[in-house]
Length: 264
Image 1: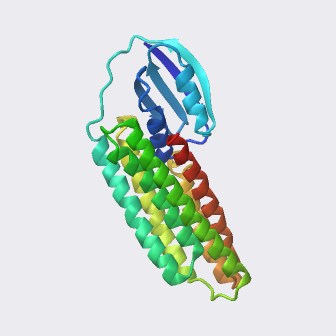
Image 2: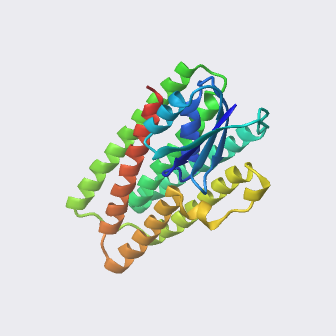
Image 3: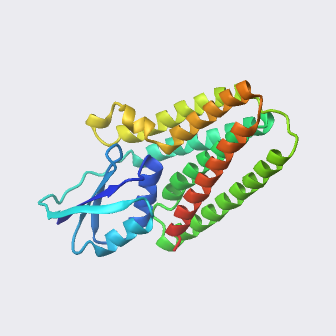
């Protein structure tokens, strides 16, 4: 048995972990994957050569780089029986906040909230693909990934068009208080998701560290919408909301292309 350690610089939260798991699914030489999200490290226990595994990790464009390969005597790995239950929990939280943020974003006329809702939906897709394709064929998983990726891109493009319309139009200011309050709750929800998933790894990681929260793209986006809401209020302009919306829509499309890579 060999043990290869990868550094993955863009592995900020559990949704990236799931993308990597799906990408490596089906490679028979892999015995176990051990993720260390706070330190952005992935340890792969495998037999034979590392070439195919390394190529798959690099193809995801998450900044994957092989650090070392060495032999190990470890051959038994404890499977986490609660993994499906945990995935269902974070899927439910993300999808619930997709609905909440989309609804409040439309009502409050905030593109930041609408964009963040799509980011929540993107995470839901990743967890959903992992769950619904469990036990299924690789072809089935790739088909689901393709549909999810294209659907995300279509929604994000619609969002970009709406941002442009509002930028050149004469729209009412978004409700800054709704932006701030809903984003605070979304921030808490993302923290809970990260805590639930990290708690499953080991006792040492049961208590969240600050780095495990504030290196997450999702949390940075939430903070961005909160700041945009404050600027909307003090500048009496909808431009901060449109700017954060544009940034998040771009991140959603980037995530969609990563999902599409799984369908190849």
